[in-house]
Image (tube, rainbow, N blue to C red; front, side, top):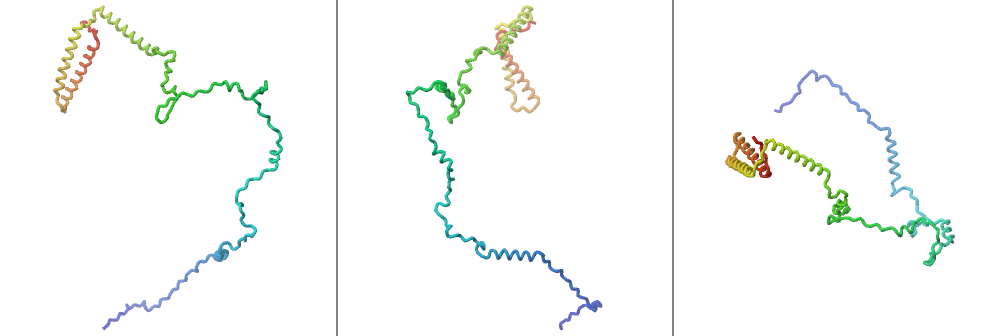
Amino acid sequence: MSEVFHPRESVYNLITEEKVQTQKPPRYISKFRPMVALEKKLAKDAMRTMGPAKVEVPVPDNYLKKHSKEPKLPEKSQSLKVAHSTCTVKKPAVPTKTERPPMGIHTKRNFIKTTTAVPMKPQPTSVDSNKGHKQCLDNSGLVPKYIKKKDYGEVPEYLQQRNGEKQRAQEEYDKFLKEQKEQGAVKQLSDFERQAVLEGLKKNWDELHHDYQGLSLVINTLSKKARKERLEAAMKQLENDINVFERYKTIYIPNN
């Protein structure tokens, strides 16, 4: 048997429901609609044919003629034509070579000055590149213009002043040595003594150099680093002393 579905029974189903009809608002219509429709109709009616509706029909006599579009020059006025045609004055003839010029007439141009003027010489230049770069010869340094100076070959003043100060210092030093000799405070080393001192300095340098060569290649401690710096300073001092004894032949030492 087929089952029959019965809706759920309720007291509220006995009450009839009123159907509420919703009313839509009237559709919006612009007040300019008739004007727009009229304008559109007029614009369409005006261009229904090919091209504008009313065109000026050309006249048969107004056809395109030959040379009608070429530019034309303005016509000359009648006054210019008359001025050119009425000129009857002739210029004087060119004087011959036998005629003498009139005396006492001054002109704007001085012919004597122009005929006797010296022609301008070209400025000397020097070309210093294969592309044609040139410059004035005086500024190039190739012209020995400095030998034409008045003080050429003279010693400058600052060198004279320096030489004078050096000479005065040497004179004062010689005077001081002379006074020390007279007082017996210093004595001069003989060549034998100077040579003996020089050999002793070199021997000491050889010993220090031998110790320096015996240092280890890897210096990773403070004591090794200090010993290396001490040997280098002693060797530098001995080298300066050796240079002094080899350079100067006359050496003075205090007389103790």
